[in-house]
Length: 356
Image (tube, rainbow, N blue to C red):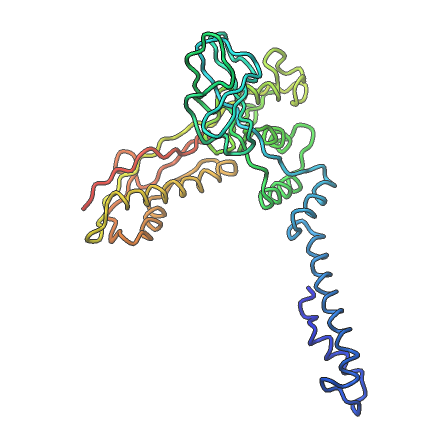
């Protein structure tokens, strides 16, 4: 807004108020007197521009955005710890620590009587989602010979970045949560650690019922444990509809994780002479995964998702080694578009290369 108030413009404006018969050349008394003032004023206008930008949520820097959002009771999400399933062949004390690679995991809860435990990664963030495998105990545990991390129950999340926080702030402002409306349910569910996108379904089982479908924070199928946790937070099973959770009294809430729709892609391509098909396939897999990730990211705001062979061909054509793509189809080798149901997201399974 204040970009036009440069040092040169300010100095020029000041000179216009000096009589024409006064020497204004560089090195003159008037120039030396007014030049520092013009420079300071130009700096003030730069600061004013920064202040103005930080007064509005769409342009505010992170610290000021947090203060603006704080006035509405909204704050950025902190990094969270991944929760994984640990399978053992002996009893493990709650609080016992184990290592895998460079990470440490702590037993926080026994899931059932068969020595299966919830294991929390001590390092917050997505790093806790990076590995499964054999655990090594810090201390000797009686009769323990096997210790394995087998499944991610709740994905760890990094601290919310500035642009994601800005988008969430505007979403909450533009869709105010109020007394159990759809926006309120979305806010409740998406504030739970490990939850990504969320859809709210009206009366799936008749009057007084609310349906929740959600993805993990990685836009994947959530674990059974996370689905149970969301249900208990919203509307505990033992007292359904009685208002003992976040849901208002009289609302019976059903909770389900999103289903995965497998995607197999058949491609018929011509590669340049000397091109290594294995290398090209790796590049193609990366492009396909990124394309599907972009489509899945729109799940919450769409009734159904669709993959298009034409869009995918355009992206794959950017690989220099591919000279021509004769055909690209999904599944049974006849479908050029693939549609998921309302409660499904896509999961890339295989790229079948036929060659020309």
